[in-house]
Amino acid sequence: MSAVSLLGLGAMGTALASALLDAGRDVVVWNRTPGRATELLARGAPPRSSRR
Image (cartoon, rainbow, N blue to C red; front, top):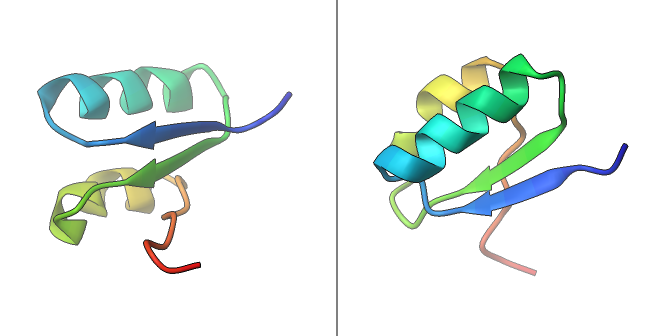
């Protein structure tokens, strides 16, 4: 199964990423404020760097 990328970790993005992680999917997350991804990173979602 391919990874899912989520850009923007507001209320909806965080809930969606959490549900996908619960379902066993690989989720890559990004938010312009890095601190919002802390919980998801702890659950195994790797961050997507804003640099190329």
